[in-house]
Length: 285
Image (cartoon, rainbow, N blue to C red; front, side):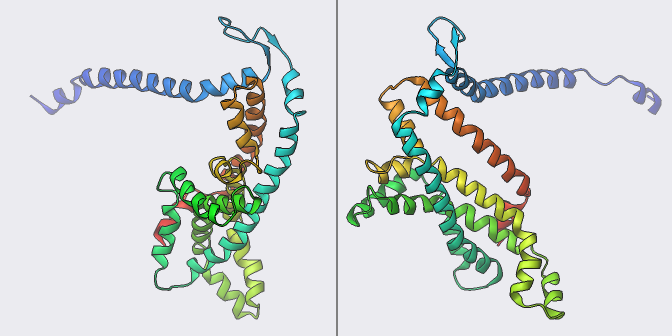
C-alpha cells in the first residue's frame, strides 16, 4: 500500500459520532444545570410582580406592583434596610483598617509563622461555617455580646478575613518594586512613593476586595441570626422569618429581587477590577 493510498483513505466516522453523542449529552447537562440555576430566579421574578397566581396556571394571572409598595411600607423592613447597609459599611471599614495593613506586612515582611498565619485565614472558610458560628456564639453569650450590634459586627468580621487578607496580599506582592526604589532614589518620601506608585497599582484589587466584603456582609444571615436575634434583625434575617412563618410569598420575592440587583452591579464592578490571577497569586506567598 502506497503512502498516497493511506493519505486518501477517508477518516473513520466512529470518533465523529462518538463526539456527537458527547455533544448531545453535554448540551443536555448544560441545559439541566441552567434550568436548575435560572429556574428559581425566574420563579422569584414572577412572584415579585404577581398579584394573583394560582395552580394550575403556569404564569401569574394578575400582574402589578401592589406587593412592592406593601413590602417597603412594612415597619420591620423600613427599620432593617438602613441597619443592614450601615452594618455592612461598618464591617467593611473596620475590616479594611485591620486587614489592609496586615496584608501589606504579609506581602513585604518575612517573619516566623507567616505561612501558617495566612493559612489560618483560609481555615475559617474550609469548615462548615454554621458550626464555627455556634462555637463563637457560646463565647459571645458568656461575654454578653448576644443580641448586640458589636456582637454582630464581630461575627461578621470573621467572614471578611479571607478576601481582605489574601487579595490585598497578592496585590502588594505584584507591585513593581523597581518603580518604588526609583521614586525613593530621586528624593520621594516613603509615604509619597506609596501614594503615587504603590497605591495606583494595587487599587483595582483593593477595590474588588472592598466590594466583595460589602456584598458578602450585607447578605450574611447565619451569624446575624445566631448573634443578633432578637434585637438585631437585618434584611437576610427577615427573609428567614418570612420563609419560616409562611408570610405572603410576594414579600420575600420582592426583597430577593430588590436586593439581588444591587449586588449584581457591585459584583460586576468587582469582576472588572479583579484580575484573573489576583486570588491565585495569594497561594504562592
